[in-house]
Length: 439
Ligand SMILES: Cc1ncc(COP(=O)(O)O)c(C=O)c1O
Image (cartoon, rainbow, N blue to C red):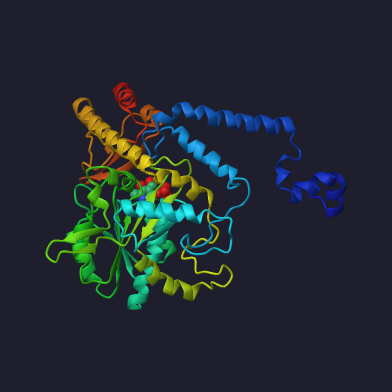
């Protein structure tokens, strides 16, 4: 190895080295501009080529259907305001006054009100905001729950979830330093509430922070909200719903009541809450073009949380206690996602949800008829996911299928799944079915 001292280095390298040391363009300092352009245009071309493949994406819950022209017209209108041309910032609580006037809080609060109504939150007891992703929404739900329960009892809660929960729950319980309890599952992959009760009884000195997944990532299983709530009765508990995918479409189907925040109590004629907060991804069912999430809870929960949060967070600098973990927040996404909260957008979502579930019926039937050896399973009639024994590598690659090893009796076996999103029309599914036969 050749060592050079500082003087030699400067004399040999001159300005090039100086640039290299301090400029973000350093990487390109010795690179002919044409090469850089070539590489960028090559990357652009490769990205553009991906568009032809988008409808074949069957393995992950992302809606690849093209958005309507009206969405892009809405974007244009937003652009005229300057929103995408200089730094707007949604720092803070969208329902509170912001010291930074360059924000889209009005759109953000309005869209939370509209989606809150979809999930049956009372309009006068509703709070939320547009997050960066489903994971970010889960993080806020768990942080709220932990803070409220900790304050109520003086003891940190234990967190309860099943092994079917999304892997981000493991990350978040680590981040929040919570002791966790893995609750057993039923054969359909939903939470076994008898086991939940057993585990709650084994941990009587800790409040319970329970995550119910409505549409688990791989199997599409559903944790039963009301049966969980029945086990939580007379305990200090907080129930957060991770409805990343199913939360987008169930409200527009005959299963709309599944996710309602309140239920009628026939015995007393009163309403009771079924859960504390809910997380939904915007890029999954809705097909919003960048990751974002809805986080919705009650104003009562938010205010209980805020009372504690304001002791951690000095509000002086931003003139309010924001109630969000992140300080600066994207102003573009809420303004753009507002488009998805109109009556006509809801009507489109209802049509997409119907087709999606019909297409899932179709896929399951065809797989049972022609590929029974792959043992296809749909966990429940709300699910748009069919999982089955792993097919050949070429099909996995062609349709970007997710695969996972799962227990099959005493053995482990490898499974793949198809998530039937709105772009997965019968024509695409037919091609997939025919390709399954070739491999
Ligand atoms: C059940 C569930 N929760 C959370 C997530 C994470 O959502 P996001 O990718 O929006 O962070 C996923 C993603 O697949 C999921 O399936």
